[in-house]
Each structure stands twice: as structure tokens, then as C-alpha cells.
Length: 131
Image (cartoon, rainbow, N blue to C red):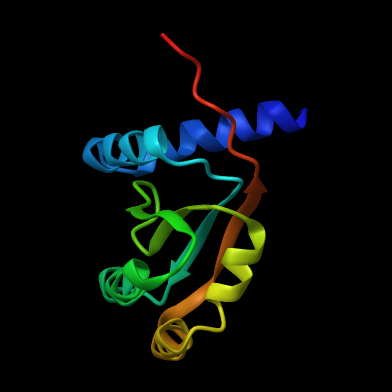
């Protein structure tokens, strides 16, 4: 499988796990932004804790400089899994966000609810083709 095939598969996967409203919001954000770095990853919650984990991760997303989109979707095949799709203006902004006090607090609060991690991929968003 080529890298392009892998990324195409990840895009299909994001479409499968994120609600249509979230995908439309992502498209709207992309029209005015120029993301240079992206992440998509699966996080597995402790049994029965998916909603609580998603809520904690959603709390701090508005205060991350350089973040263009941070979307959380429930995995339709695994009741304990979530998918996180992130778009950033650069890899440096993502790295810097991990040191923010609010993000550190969220990580500390979420850690006991995390059972593990699944697939994770970094990617370079490409410009949307004109219609």
C-alpha cells in the first residue's frame, strides 16, 4: 500500500466515524485556512468511559494557538473508541499546544480513562481542488 492509498483510507475512515455536521464544519474551516500539519488517531477509553473521555478532550480545544480543527468522533465499530482529527498551521504549533497549562490539565484528567491507542497517522493536508 502506498502512502497516498493509506492517507486516502484514513480520509474515508474519518468520514465514516465523524458526523456529517462535523465533516461540513471541517470543510468550512479548510476554505479559509491553510493547514500545514494534520493528525488522525484512535484512542481507546476504559470500558464505558468513551463519552467522559471525549468530553474532557473537547474542553480545551478552543484555546490552542495554531489549531484549525480538532474533531472527535465515536468509532462505530468499537463502543470504547474515539477518533481524533486535528489540523494545525504547523507541526510546531501542535508541539507547543502540549505544553499549555489547560492541555496539561486535560491530559492529567483524561489519563485514567485511556485504555490504549489504535492507529495514528501524521499527514500534510493538501489544497482543496476547485470545482
